[in-house]
Length: 390
Picture (cartoon, rainbow, N blue to C red):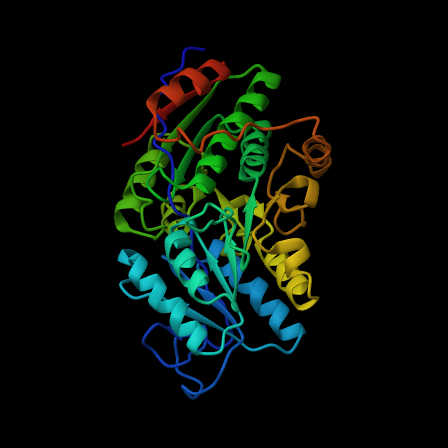
């Protein structure tokens, strides 16, 4: 099948979370999840989440990370709080530094800061506050001027290409032939790029096995802020109106716009991201997950077990199926495929977990290059036609 592969302008920062039973902004007093002030400004919180962009309770990445901190804190009698940098989606490194410094002033011993945009601010604040520990979610090993790993920072990254692969494969195996994907970050976010690349590979694998042709429409146009918008809803509505059957929504609160668009069409379906988003709508047929809450909680447990120096400091954990950190939700309430069975999924997942099937992930360095997608992706896909909706 001839493919009209136009360049996949890949993603940017899926970065954001918030944590806390008691939380606030860089200027507000402590508040609960709704933003309502609850505690005295003098109260101290030893676990802090510093968000980047997007909403805390986004039903996705931010919320998943938040719930990991919340779960650990409440089980272990620890105080916790979230801090939102100033200027919202336009937050600068200075805003992020201010939020981290406010968290430290508020008693933080550990700061969990998700999203790759946190790198510069975290590096600066961590070097100035060596007694505070930092967890860089969706990050990498940060270094000082001498290119040495900063010992009071640990990073968690995920093999999102595995979850993306499984979602793309499942959709095609279930019978869908017209797929879409809208991705947050505008094209420069490695995590979203891996989801996208895996999604295309999984769709190709299932289409090849079934000897069928599949269309895949991709866009990063309205994903810069990972937020819902009327523009995104209008775009996805036009996709569904033109026959697209299922859209992978990859980017925080963007899912709300995709669900709203799907609601106007009986046949339209949605694939969620990061956490199980089935509860958001019956339109969500599956979600490409990464176990944010579990992995964040695990790191906090290692810190409190005095294992920071031996297991975490200056290191990055790259988690995937082998650690049960990627995949699709298989609970009965979340499994909404008709032809692709849980048993089929388990066999496919087992191959990835064992390493006998390895979805490619090498999109980071060249994710914004037309040549990468045309020479590499186009050469690999024989049954999937990819077009970019700009």
